[in-house]
Image (tube, rainbow, N blue to C red):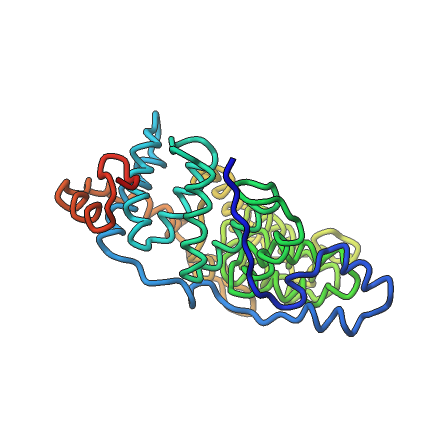
Length: 337
């Protein structure tokens, strides 16, 4: 098995293992710990590279093949992804990594191809690539296993703006005394980038801390990102529990219509869970008080757009051939000639 040995110059925390953080807290090095944990929120969309529009056509068709109902030809999807990825399409590269590393698509050397893909994305400074590399290091897939290096890559990804990494590192910090402030910052940063679980866990942390207004706003972000648990919690909160000991108490007045709408949303999200639904129009369906509750026809923007989405056109052979030739690839597989 071929492995790669990687090195990146990283700040102190990035080369500090979780065990070392525990040691710092036990030695009461709180000031040093806080300095090493310092975090500034960055959004992934601000640093992602532009997408080649020809490559986008291939990516969209590969995605259609991968996600369509019924039998799937993952090798065919991988072909389109490979050619698109060679032209810098980071989404195609990420999807291809998943197909190859999970053995769904054939590869002459799955580990080698996967690591080369993630390395190219890191060269483009794609935050999610550092997060993926963290997991490969964590399990020793194609690289020498190292939890210390894995944590370094997770933190690097979080600092660059990966919401997945921000959520992941926040959960690590939840176990470190002195880490809760940065944990909250990371969860908030991820939540407002559309990370559903980060929003829900942020809301719960704030509710337990009696920061009810902030908790409600966090759960609203969770609903927007498609989290059914956040919808359930807001539905229960708008039933107006009066005891601060109640699991759903958030200092809200009872509002039957708001409670009902969140309940409807919860059911919709659960029923469509396999399709990764979102509620981008949540603030027009159930805006938070003091905004007045508007009328609602019971429809969801996500569902309307999904129903109207057409099957993408199959890319023309001439386009496949040209893009393959430009990168010296076999158009029948997307692999190097």
